[in-house]
Length: 455
Ligand SMILES: Nc1ncnc2c1ncn2[C@@H]1O[C@H](COP(=O)(O)OP(=O)(O)OP(=O)(O)O)[C@@H](O)[C@H]1O
Image (cartoon, rainbow, N blue to C red; front, side, top):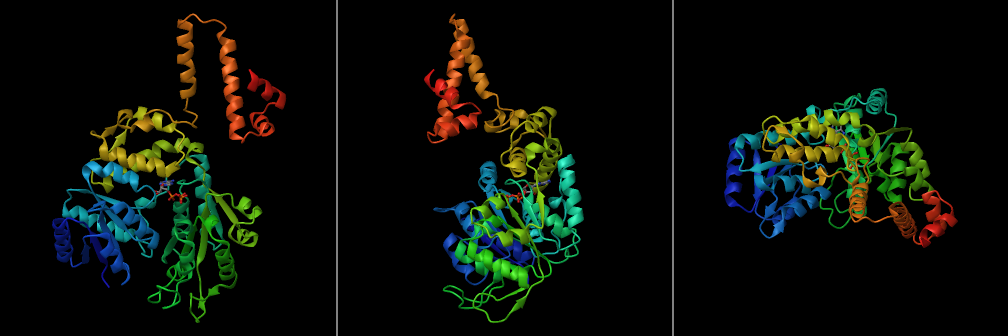
């Protein structure tokens, strides 16, 4: 059946224009003026795509989208927003794979975005393409790429580890794309984003009446991924009860839907990812050791961006171009000084953070060449925690200048005393008052710490 597109906007004119347009394209569209009616309609079955305004009358389109995404993780969503709000919208939707449509838009642009969003939806053959390209020439990243090449031919279980936003899902997709399963679906599910009591039916599906609210039979992700690859993201957050069930399914290759009596055989390659230390969770009894060993036959570690800063110029270039294409903007590029600045930042949010920054700069910069002046304030100053951070020594510098100008003497002793007291007090407080622990963490003896606290 043709794809069904849902439109939600409180502006009847926009609803009308879009409905007419989809009609002219022989596409099925249905529109809603508020979240409640859209959510009610979900009971009849999900749409293939949603186009939503972020500002709805009396409710936040943002909350609605997050709720929708929790229920239907893979639902493609296009967010409409006034051009002036584009930056805040892009930031607010951090983390989700949303497309953005700046108002006013022209209908060709809508058509292009819709085609792209539908193409990228999971379960469709054509998920490859430019968006999936893995960028990185650094030795750390090239090592990873070689591993992907070696591991893609087999069904060997791979646990992908790395900090948030390092590209774990992209690695999983690459493993699938280069495998003999490539023509079959790649299905991703984020274990942490789904409420515990729904997760089991999400994974294994349910029969009508299996639990209150189970209106009809629904296939689970295992079934959707049949013949292909199932990617379980944030596996460390999976509840113990479900870990037991997953282990059994992996061992036996068959399972029942919730409330079902037919045994279903499954042929799915399971890839998993986590940003947690699973070994540590096993030691704490929060993750089953046998499941851990089954999933982690091979561990692929995706390095954080700060350990492969050489890749920052190429990634920046890639994301600026991508954003220009996506938002229908003129070509964008970064000047040397901006690249140098970006390459020194700490990037706690890793590649995803860099991508979002590039999107917002591409959308907002007035010229085609983007420089340091186009950076949002919080990126212009170097941030705490990074090796580019010198703000605390800067504070000391200006204090020293002030006192030198005031002709104070004994400055070395005074500064040293303050430095030591600050170190000692902060460490003790951070260790909940435990002085032995604080001394150990600072790498000094307890006596020295006691002296520093007194000085
Ligand atoms: N090497 C890369 N080349 C190009 N794009 C990348 C690369 N690594 C990550 N990205 C992009 O960065 C974003 C985050 O990547 P991804 O979702 O795969 O990270 P993740 O590690 O799975 O995150 P999380 O831990 O939050 O699940 C995506 O938009 C992805 O396309």
